[in-house]
Image (tube, rainbow, N blue to C red; front, top):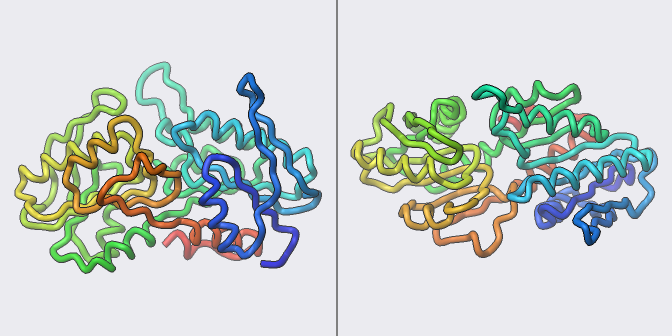
Length: 314
């Protein structure tokens, strides 16, 4: 893509993914300077002329979600004040997505707050991948492109030529996506019923569906502490699942005890995308990381060229 009016920048949250995306697009990454003052405040400056340009800033949300978001807001503001024609925020992992409703009295809806802040900062479009819930799109008054890693993950599973597969949703909220994956790989569907007592604490009470003697593929939008997934294995084994168990997810957060839990659970494989950086100390035997750069890069390209991106959702 030689059109100089498209400028793609990336922040400090995941430079490896940013570099892959710009390489896929065939353009040089935009020049941006991001640093921290001694007191912790973030400084950002666009180091090239972007007046009248369609600008993209790639910033995912890692364990340092507050830093990542604040950096994104500041970069967007810098672009707006530099007279960018349009500003698209590409957020492979959308921060605070799990706080999308009031589950108890006097709770915030933090996902809505993040949406408001992105619009206030000056974003004209949001591109995200596998939001925790579809309703988050409604928190915005600007276009939101919600991509899915389902084609990437399902193609990988199909290439393994597994037999007698059952796709397992970790809860009822994930059942719809799990059914789509099951249809893609020609598998049956099962659902884990769980009870959550506190944040990061849940208990699987029973399994809905037939898993006995089947190869199991558990799918979720993210793996955070891995509590839900690893606790579900015991329930699956109790129901007669004596074959390999695979785990696939879009976002591999791997916080707290996640790496230890996943390493000890004897999964055949844990498959995630590179939507968030996974440092060497969080990588373990059986972990497979798939690239999302082509998917995100193609969404950027098609938005710039005013072409449909509907096929990327399938």
